[in-house]
Length: 225
Image 1: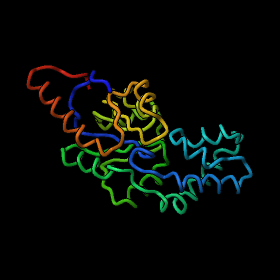
Image 2 (image 1 turned 30 degrees about the vertical axis):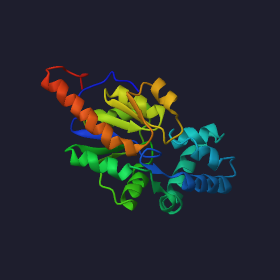
Image 3 (image 1 turned 90 degrees about the vertical axis):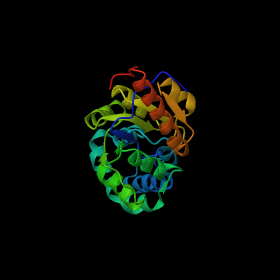
């Protein structure tokens, strides 16, 4: 954990979706294997689900799909996704509470994900969550565009790509070890703090806000936002 950060949360807190707020892995395994059966390509659902994060077109290319087939394969995956993945997805521990504590603090809750936005919104709807803004199809440092646009002072994610996105936006980078990247990987990517899960987020947010308030009262400025 690094203590070299400060500054207030601001008016918005951002979260990644897969393996940060939700666990879609059982459905992801089935959906990718279904796509393999239909297409004849050697897609591996288990491998895919254990490394969620990179965009789907990158994943398919790494599995050996030719570039000319990828747009149709992505479209088909998105088509079968709602029926297969949505009902098999569960919220990760502390996710609902993390979103709620952000809203209770007076900030807006933002979700920025590499997932297709329409399917991401179905997850939020299925779980009965309220988020102020959802932005899809952004990965790694691309996420900084949405974080900057919406004034996010904090971004929470499970992947080193999320940490890179937060840092590129000048936001406090909060890692969670609920995804494919362990504590060391997240810290090495530059995470300001790493939590074991979102169950720790409300306490961290209260501490962070308290520290930022003390800095402001003492006339000490945190990092520029």
